[in-house]
Image (cartoon, rainbow, N blue to C red; front, side):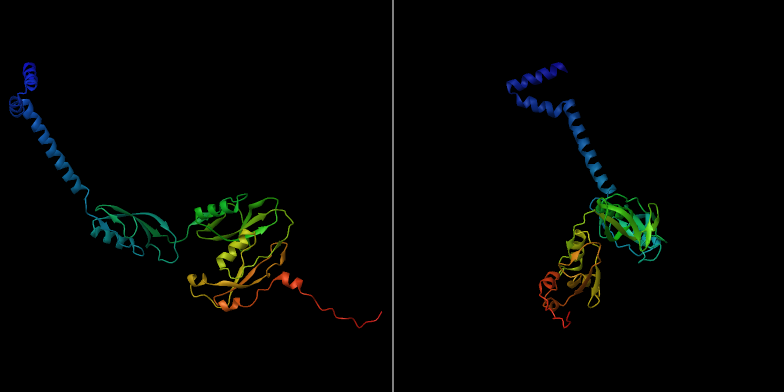
Length: 299
């Protein structure tokens, strides 16, 4: 074998290409190489074809909307399309009947392969009871994030004088003061009592005129003032309609000197003509001269 290889190399040096070609076409070693390559190509092709069949390459199923259906109905729909399902959790949503599907993963309209398992979330028969986390000494933002992470929310914030500013001092629902660990129904909105510092500096009531309800509420919040009471001139027909209202009047009026946790009332409308009336301001009232009435009494 060694002599044959040496002769082959000598043939290459002499330029004997015919002998070289003849060697690669007839030598058993070369033939075995060709057979090996052929077997490898055939096996690779079969493997790729098998994977396409096994993974259903190119075959995609668009997931239907299963929301509101029972598990049995969803299971039948999915089985007809070559899919399976599994219930993984329950959520409380009062707007849908108990036992029906409220969510699915993957979502509606997603494309999946045949044989995929679809995970279902069903409506619980009753709302979960969630223990109130300890919010004491957390910042207002931290407290709100903590409540949202466990399924609760903030309805209102009341600012009170305290030694430290922007720290939660207490939590309540209505007139009921809550302590950490109190069990609340999922989705309950609470009121936070937050410190606004010990400063005795007075501030003036800002103008909320022409602001939307959300803008006016945020402006008051930035000044550590309570959420305003809202009075509509005509009742909105939807949440979207509510967002179209803007402030045309307020109490206390603009520039009123505030000293405590005064409540604020805003009057809102969609009628732009109500903005034609000049805004009432406390500074204007103070600047107006008053006519002195002479006294008829004699000393």
